[in-house]
Image (cartoon, rainbow, N blue to C red; front, side, top):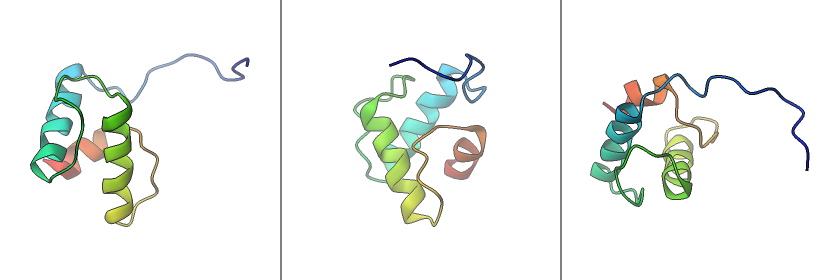
Length: 71
């Protein structure tokens, strides 16, 4: 299937930001796989579950607001 959108920045996060996010999710009991700084399936699933639990839309997408909220 073809993509209709263009490529661009993805969340403006560094790998260290993702690793910190993963560590924070792990500390809250979420299974992110490992805190390796790569937002794979388990990390994205955990983000969505955290968002739903906290009354947010479950985008399953890491962004700066999520990183700040989980610090």
